[in-house]
Image (spheres, rainbow, N blue to C red):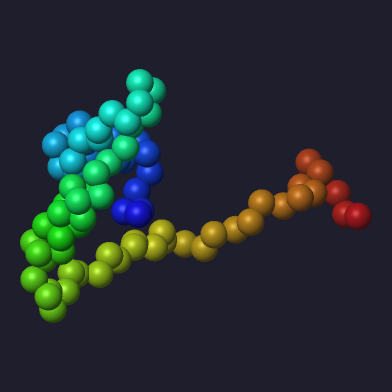
Length: 80
């Protein structure tokens, strides 16, 4: 529903940035729909509409990437 991994969700709960789960049974826990929807609304309300974030730019490595050879040349440069 929110598009994060279990680990990220657990970390968000531990940090207090996501509503804690409620116990359903002795071994199972779940999240209240109202709490998750309120969290989602709070996140969308925090970012003004029309505010664009700077694009993430990846840096390219200098030089050319060369694929490894499957059959390296024998030592001494012998011709085939």
